[in-house]
Image 1 (cartoon, rainbow, N blue to C red):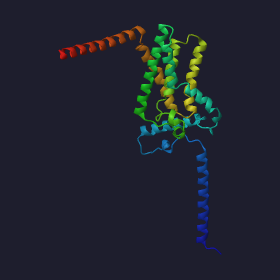
Image 2 (image 1 turned 180 degrees about the horizontal axis):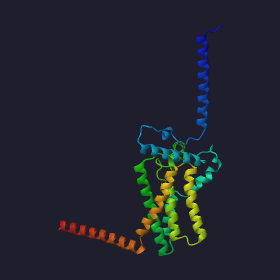
Image 3 (image 1 turned 180 degrees about the vertical axis):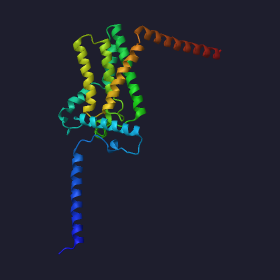
Length: 264
């Protein structure tokens, strides 16, 4: 007949074994699932001020909504089968093809008006790239955990996520095309649809959070207002280049006279 102490020890052993098997089962489920958030993203302390608690609550809502939308985060996600198609849409908003395309059209433009539009689009893309990089380095919000574990993301995804460069570029280019190039209703619908799909792809692939995309869209929308205010005409650019060239030649000419005087 076993003693009460031995029975209690055996029960504790069974309970500990059950907990260990449960933890192992949950660990396998977590390992097989697609990582999205790091555990520290949801940490909240009630000792913080009310403003900090409110900010943490809004951040938790942002994380929850972003997680719900990340249905193409990896191959095991609910819509992981369409991930290659979504990544193709994502690539259409990358800065490299846009810069290459605009510079090519700038060099091969048939008219001065077309070259002027491509020139300002190139300057707008450079401005967008610089402003997004500056804000990212200032805020330093880390990308979702899925991007930290994606091998291809090492080469194509940046370290910081706020704001979304794809979203700001899509909004800026969409407004640029609507104001300068899109002259039909079908073209306007196509441009707006492309901008919406590029922005949505950042959420479906779990590249960014909802606030990153929202701020990026607002930032890109405002960037075109800056471009429109400082619109560079082709004549103005030629005059500026001529002035710079003339100043360079004058400095070189003065340098030659200084050398000749020194020799004599």
